[in-house]
Length: 122
Image 1 (cartoon, rainbow, N blue to C red):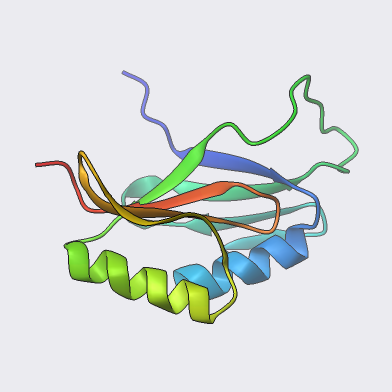
Image 2: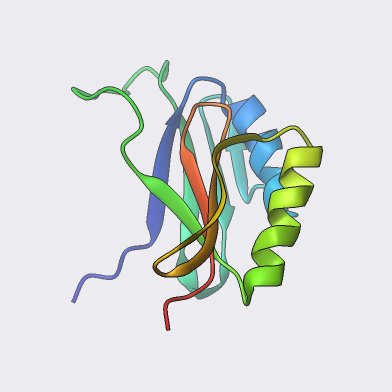
């Protein structure tokens, strides 16, 4: 069985995105190059930030059609992150709300990738 180990986001400026995610995640990248940076998580999953201007970057698509989701333990934790990210100037695309699965909001990274915070489904 295949096990995913990397979420890859295409970014315009890996250094800017790396600084954004370092602050957001509270950790430094595990790898950092002029056109790529990566963050490692427990369980073998990594987040990669790949420059759209890298020599061998190629895509036939445009725009950001995915979400990177962060599940936190309860509604209060969702609301704390919402307040903290707003204070820090993170762009909020979808305001704090209660959806069918619980409290949630969506923020944007510097390249417009959607970052959803929510509680786990019951």
